[in-house]
Image (cartoon, rainbow, N blue to C red; front, side):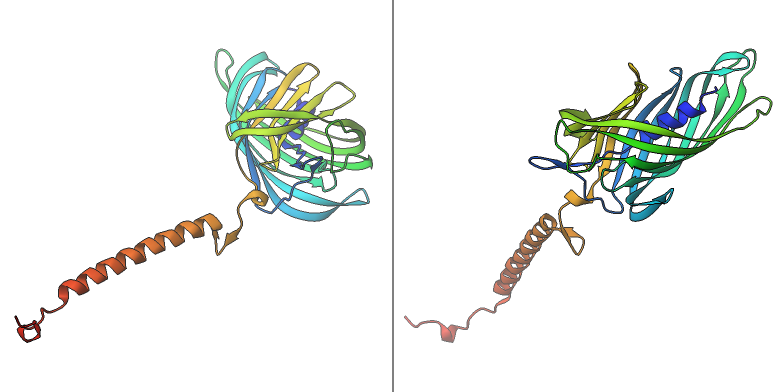
Length: 319
């Protein structure tokens, strides 16, 4: 299973990359993110087309901050990442291709610059364990990938607000460091790689598209992020959620990863609250109080009427 670079790229690209925007009559603008906003996605990621990671990944907004990358400072937004799921498929070993099954856990964080919400820093930690179903005996395995990547924006005109049809090439200098370990049977030698390279991508706001997800039906904007090597991603942003309703990653013509929104919290579109209650909550509470008060008043009046003593005969009119 010698696929560490692809693994990190797929995870960062398909599970983490956020291009969040919001709807206006003529343009698409950046969202009003608040600490505590969160989105959970059902993900399916393919490694080398034969090993699949399926599960749930949650992104949570931590808040705005100033971040420096290689001497350049950006206004940015930080997100935390957590996820878990199952792992199944076939992996390449010294014994040849072997079926494998197990589970995985993912954690990390990602920083996006504020002007266009492009990734400038990410830290990923993937841990997986399970069983290689080799013959004649099963062999336990452990997989771990720790990846740290930063991007310095060199040429960047992808800025909000945007309109359908807008397209920009973003040039970035990427620095990365990764530790990859795949243990089964006898201990394997850990692999450490690091380097620096240029990573350009073309961003295009293509069209409005209706999307159905486990979280509901959404009107979305489809954004394409394409690299010169033919790989690309499609991001279906739903303004009502403040984030993508669905994402798809392609290696040329082959789909290698998908994610679908299953639940979310976007506080910018939540009703205003007073002492913890929305205006609707207060109206319902007020109606309930009025009903209770009215019922108590009726009961009190009835009891008062029944408890009044009868009038004496001297007060009765004479015939």
